[in-house]
Length: 524
Image (cartoon, rainbow, N blue to C red; front, side):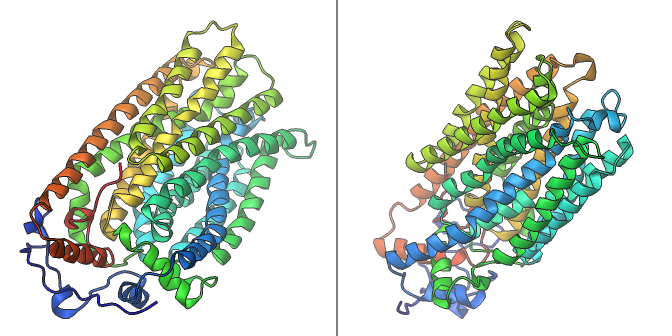
């Protein structure tokens, strides 16, 4: 790799103050690039400067680095995400193995035990995402994995609603950082085009581990020990997760510059690969103006609303085992019949990821289309005769196509928001919506309506329809903004355009937000 000049001359386009958003090229801030050199705020530091100053690596060298990233990081993320799904849904698995009786849960207390996890998630969300920005990312996430595993094992000692609710609350506190942390990791390591299928891969492991959880729980259900069956579920899952948290800290680096499994040249290539994302890796610089931009950006507000309506059915699915057992199946059979839920979810997630990768600008369309099977599922559950338990069971299985909407949402968080503080704020806002939806979802499932829960199923139907519509509203906003920026380039010479492109690439490492980077384009 050879050196190249990265200090572009002053742009012919007039700049404006930092507080303005782009409405034309005359709003592009000149920055300090052509005057005092680079002002890198990114955690990658000097390696980012070297990456910007060095000619692009060969295609073969880039492939070697990508293969290493996929080998070392992606499998760890996939298994970790599957474990966090399995651990937080352990309450659902244990619901048919005595946790309700042993903790003397009455009325809506099971619903609240499910919901209170997300109160902990909600309370910890903004402190958590702030710490993600400030602390070494991988070490912080690994510590949280070990802590939530400990809480999971402590849950086995609970014997009352108060104890169970307390354990669930703190489980939510420690799990709250994983999804926003994984959004950050995805943005750090992969290009925008690569992020789609990788993001969908780790989300798909919710489905994979749902199936694995069914098998594991079925096996545990045959144990004849001194403890109640549900307690073994928590102890075994907790022990597995502790070991995995240690492995996570050992393998996952905080950023490309600290990866032990990359050579110095490969670290530079890893940074070069994500330059065109225009989001950098991570900056620990805190910018108050970016907080205001996040809260006033209608695209971020729509992401919050989509997260909220998508989470309502997730809260409801904590009653999945109870609904299936209500069709007349035994506890062990119910556990087995839960397994296709994971397989169906994995199928929809990976299929959607493949289509998003192959069809340009299709993410939000595919996200909306994946609401349709879930809509059909709610109709089957609510309208088929109670004696048609297999038809209603198929309806339950179809419900799990909707998580594709959340998967699309996570992808947009990593690709469509630039500026570390803005990204942190937007992540927090989106997961506040997620928590509120998760808290609200179980409350539509009234104990008096057990086991059919018609009000809960109708609430899920409304959420699916709203998700479908809001996806398309957001897509329209992205399209309009992209067209406005394309129009702003009209009339400029080729040299002026190239100069602005170079400036835009550097701004990704200078913590410039998406609304202030004229060559930033929103993925659809």
